[in-house]
Image (cartoon, rainbow, N blue to C red; front, side):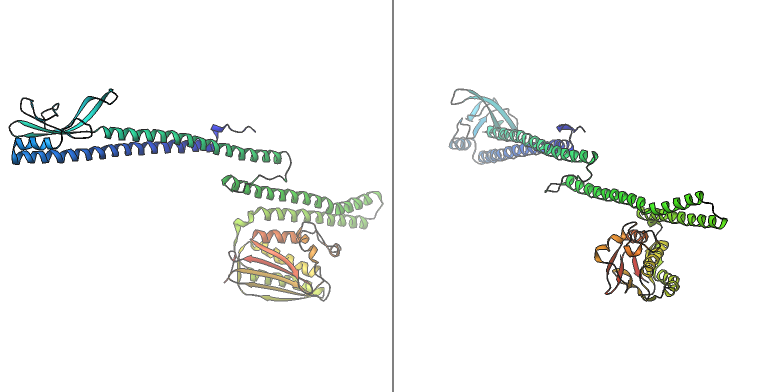
Length: 459
């Protein structure tokens, strides 16, 4: 399987997208900071010049032109860019006071660009912010100050953001490449593991790292799925082996009897006997396949769609009534302790079969004189159905194995059956979200079926 190139990975594309969005945001912030800083510094400069111009005009209005000239002289007229410049011109454009002359006789703000010599005798352009105010007698007052520092501050901000822009690109691209490379490494490990599983190594599992990111969570789910599939495959293999082993005996018996009937000269009654035996063997085989198909149907979960509220108490009582004569005939007793009106959301037919199989097993596999107790109890959290006896019981080593398909204890091989009864019971209980456990009854065996309260309640 060919892995995608670095730039084709989802992580790289997402990193590039986020980098682009971040750069746009960074650019918008840079422009905003530049404009805000430029506007603030310019406004501060204009406010300072405006205040000075208003004071000088007030001086002129109160004391006349001579006092205005004196005030401008005391302000220290200088061509230095660090100080303000002043100018008063008449209607002919002649400079009356100060040294600022190159402005238009028009009230308002003006920016004068003029060339100056630096200390290195280089030609420099100076931006002079000038506030012009009209005076009586067709004269004009101008107050100006160098605003180059505003431009320099703006250029510093732009330069800083350019370097920041480059740094963001470098770090973002580097981070994107790193994440994409790490993503590809993880994908490659998952791909190699998948190829190993496809090649036949069904025990192999997808790698999971310690940091548990999204891919690791997905790998965990896939590993759980593979475990389930592996369990099903093993179950199918076991079932296939069990079918071959358990059906060999009845089929061999059937073949032997049929061949015997062909090779011997038998009477009509003997032929009838052989045919009846053959039918009995065929029924046994068909019953086995029917039980297996029933287990498969139950395990598929298709019956869950037809779940309804059923009265489990009535089901258990009906099963006890049906099997009570059988128990009495075999010299066994059944005692019951059934809570009334215990309801359960489930399949009535399957729940009936569950109760029947458990009670039938207790009757079938215990000796004469055994006492069997059936109880049903429900609380706000769970429902318990218990079948207990004082017979020989089952040793702990075999209690889980009895739920395997076709498994039969040695003492049970002489009794009728195919070893699928408890397998069907386990499938029914699992379908209803419950559990089944075998425990010691001192003496005997106790079978406890527990179904949680989301399926049950007491009416």
